[in-house]
Image (cartoon, rainbow, N blue to C red; front, side, top):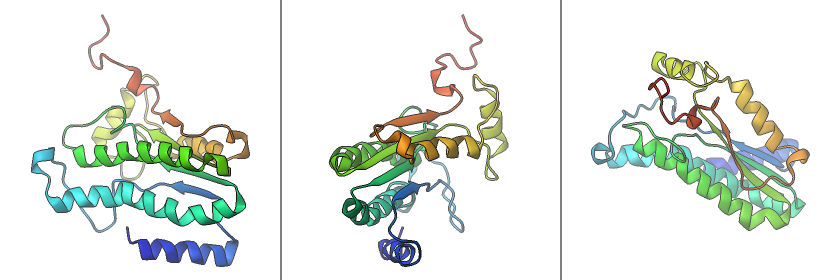
Length: 195
């Protein structure tokens, strides 16, 4: 969340490995040492709102801005933003700060795709649904089991999509939002048992 640290990180990477050609932004809702409680929009404090914006859309902005000069110089770059279905497609009561920030990733993805596509730089997003990780709650794991495929996704399944979007094979994919949610957002009548 600190632009100076991001610039320092990119300078250190360039010094050791060369300029960044592929950037995968994978900031999440959990940050070590910080806890933000769920709350409806009207009950969010300014600090909690700022935290969601800084951690999700702010980090994405700082990293893309730091990566662009080298990508422009090379006339090549792949940017993959890990967003969420929460925000652009669905939302969860009490998650308005998170949902808003994740929806903003879609707007930033499309803007970068449009502004830099002619320079050989693509920008796409992966929108995961219920993915089982070490930080998943029991409720989130149960929600994953309720998807059409009957389980939560895995980090490897999300990574496979990001790797594709970062590849040469995805050179004509630009500004796309790839949903990785086991079909969960397809189900209109959740829990209704059909007609």
